Length: 281
Image (cartoon, rainbow, N blue to C red; front, side, top):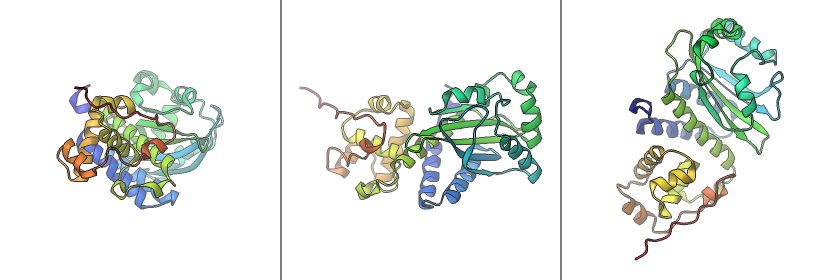
């Protein structure tokens, strides 16, 4: 993976800054969803953002968005073309949905170039009629399951027609954001058990902190959380900055306890991790 495609500390900070803003908006779905789209389109250098949920199970020719919100169209005509496309409730002519549909109920984040060759994309009637007509092209599509609601949460970010394509780095930024957002949604309502020092930390940062204080190294944390070691390293930098620490030793001294409150274990689907064994000798 090229360096220019890797997440930077600035990328990670931007993701958590936006998540913090969303939390401050409370439970008003319209407010935080719109702020989410404006923040993501700015962060990713895109024009249009769409979000909503899909009731499970759905069929390829009957997909009804729940709580849809959209932002960033260049005009009412362009937005009207896209809404007409969705109002037919039949996405079977969209070449991307043939790959998304088998993955319903599962996590997925993909750029346009991960779906099909460009020649096949631009030769499709759907692209020429709806994408070109509404002035959008390159995109990142992301979905995360919300099993307690029986829905998939979708985020769709698009660049203008003829704009440079969205690249893998932007795809990784959106994937990180969507992972964290799904954890926040799952963890919402369980705030009463938080240690005050955990206020403002995302669930993934709390998981990383808990594993760090249990004695796990970056490589082990990456394996347990199913994320890259580079991402774990960036999380740890954010934690040091938030806690006013410069090293693992200072972090341990700050907490003066082997592990924080086990919030990570309360998140549905998060595996129960044994504490690291102390070195022998």
